[in-house]
Length: 298
Image (cartoon, rainbow, N blue to C red):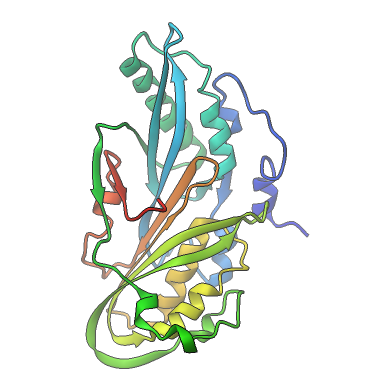
């Protein structure tokens, strides 16, 4: 039996679609976030986190009124407290509909018109404020999350055994310790698209400050357990956040971010943090004027 999320997503996913040769905002599909959240006792009206979803579309192009092509990287963000997220294939088809559309007499005028249209269309579809910017080779380029350490370097791989590849929060183990900050990254996060079942790969970043220590071995086992899961990127990050938050003390700080590799010319970077988090790790990533990357896969 197909659930409501798959019903919405199936409008485009897994189907041959020619899209449109001209601007067409009807191609956009909004997915309700609540369908996945309710499985993990995450309530839309009482979210345990704050944050944003950051998207990069690397193949945005349009024409001026004189047929001059313009190509840019489009960066957009919207708040995770929105009722909906945008389905990625519908976003790709929507953005492709700009390819042969003509706007403005100059490249800057054309991009200004496209920015207004995209922000308006996405904001209306998702019922939230969406911010958009176009990046080129002159845009600010910054490296982010440099203080994070690869969690695989913290364990003995020769004795590490992974047995579960479906989400397994029961493998997480904690020890009592002195209050400490942990900056951990895992570069082999894999999950699968909910409808097409195509794999999604990403780097996940976990920061927490607590007297509780989540053992690195158990955290690796948990993150590996997403390998056979079928969820959207945003859902995976929220699931990881919720499982870890449930283990920590109420006063502890928690920040989770995932930088997924691009698929179909688009990548997604969900960010979630709790109310106690005092840092600014997300600052450059949510700045839509900057091209903010971590490593070679992004």
